Length: 527
Ligand code: G4P
Image 1 (cartoon, rainbow, N blue to C red):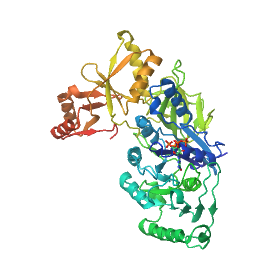
Image 2: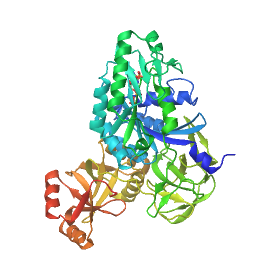
Image 3: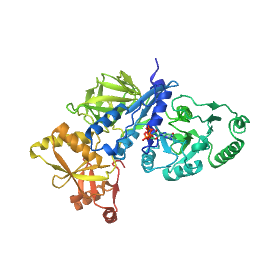
Image 4: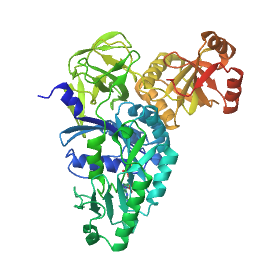
């Protein structure tokens, strides 16, 4: 039997982030293959939502099913328990991804070497930076005619605002790809395109000057490689684990996920350097994973596939102590005890009942509407876990009730769907206007569809001209009250009852900011 400390120290919980199509699904699958969690390639379904079929509801429902199955993929590798948290790639579900990143201890970022750093990756990196999440970078698709390695690294440093340290180095690219020199392990990996095989051919060499290299590469390539490695070691500081763990420097690997090339090196380095479950802040104090009492928070809620039963699965990140099935836990927001007899763990694609779980693990709890995103569960501790913020939506629509007889159904549906984090609801102080904000247009379609099918409520969403929802604060409470009074027509409450200023345009917001210098405007709900 392992004790709590041992269970904690063997856990690694991370997320893979990437712009769609960079190779996240492929890499996940290869990692699971190494862990023996799956036997064949093709077993991991992409969670991508195909735009061409977006009005096809069956398709969206199917996609939702897939994304439950791949929400958490756990596997064992070299005595470690590794949990991969899936992050939706579709832009419209970015908010989901941000929240998932609050539940990980580190991140692997996949970049396509042809396309370089793409928009979505920049946004996701911002979220990592908010919590100083350690990042390892995997530059993928080396079998394609990609950009020069130095250029790519510069781009990562510039666009993602993080320093890099190459841990491996490509020899050739695209058609001329011959292998990768592993700076971290000091060996050379010959490239042989092979989509299924587990191991690639590592050539044992003693450092970059080993004549063994010449047996495997033409002389010109060996010389070029030696020059480049010299340059790399001159330009970039030596790898230092501490700067990685502080989120200041991202170690970089090169490879080709689909060819299973460079993936083992990535995984082996990850298992050595990636952080074990870390302490987390509540409103009251920092809680250590090794504290005996269980605590955790909910970062994701998934509606059940069967619309007739409003069962949902709430995903809890265990932060401290041991979670035991059937125990009573304290629901901090509702200030009462709940018994969770129906807990699910996730191992690769299989769901299984879980008897106990440890910090770093994700547990799925069946819920009928008591839990919402950001909720904290504990063994009596009263502080909420911090760091599960809402971001200002990008699109805003007013909710129009189309059936006056069904306003109760609509209220209930809206409330529950907001708890799931599908969108954000803002209720104006004046009148009863309700505005829903989302990241993309797709959510409005999903909302309308689900309100009708699951709650028997008929609502229309009418676009309103709002630029951003700004959470507001001021050092002097009187100033805030005065501001709210002056702008009452544009003040709404968010789901928690916090006041929000609904800014109609960028220019107008700037003007208001100038007129009320003592009020702070935030695009994020935690500040
Ligand atoms: P995502 O989850 O990040 O969106 O990307 P995904 O893994 O689905 O990969 C996107 C496409 O890129 C897939 O091709 C995949 O096979 C391909 N890919 C992944 N890694 C590599 C690589 O190292 N080299 C090359 N050349 N391609 C790679 P697809 O055509 O969209 O799908 P499929 O039919 O090939 O699976």
